[in-house]
Amino acid sequence: MRYDRQQTSWQGRPAGKVRLLFPRPSSHTLGVSMNMYKSAVSVVVLASLLTACAQVPSPQQANDEGNVAYYSQRYDDALARFGHALAVAEKNGDQQYVAIAMFGLARTYAQLCQESDAEKWFNASIAAREALPDTPHAYITQNLLEYGRFLASWSRQSEALSLYDRAMPLLESLGLEEGDPLGYVFVLDEYAALLTSAGRTGDASAANARAKMLRETYKGRKAEFTPEPYPDCNQGT
Image (cartoon, rainbow, N blue to C red; front, side, top):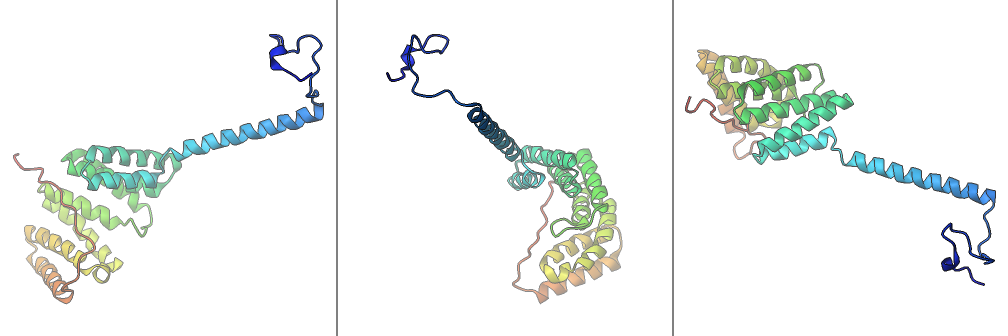
């Protein structure tokens, strides 16, 4: 008689004298099956953990998403992304991305004209960056110059100039004039304007002359770097 599930009792045992075509498994078979079951469970658990990890953006991914939001002028989204990058970087002890995420927060608050928050994060990013080596994508000069641009947008030229005074020799050491001469011209123009506002006319003339020379030498070449302007947050005050 063929085994028929319809002939089992509510306890799952065959009703009457029904012969089972499937023999009772041996203890060895049960052991092997249990090991296979445990292995399968382990694989499922591992896959679940890997999936969960994959769903948590790395500091780099979150920071990249923050930059996309920033340049799309979705500043609230940018704050959330940079904030997440900072939290994950701090948890992982990734000091490079701690500094990078702080820099992103500073720039975003600057675009939102939130002066005190922007200052807080610019200062924090500079302090963090000072304790780290530069990387091909993160230099202390970026932090110094962006903070200076922000301060200049708030008509705080003397404070901005002190940051440019510090950054310009570092730019020289990086060879920016050779790598991106017309990008360097933008910085020289900014520096000359700040020097003029401080009455340092001789230094301003030297910066202007150098910018003019680079423009003439590299006619037709495009700048790889152009500063991202900050809004005039003093307008209407």
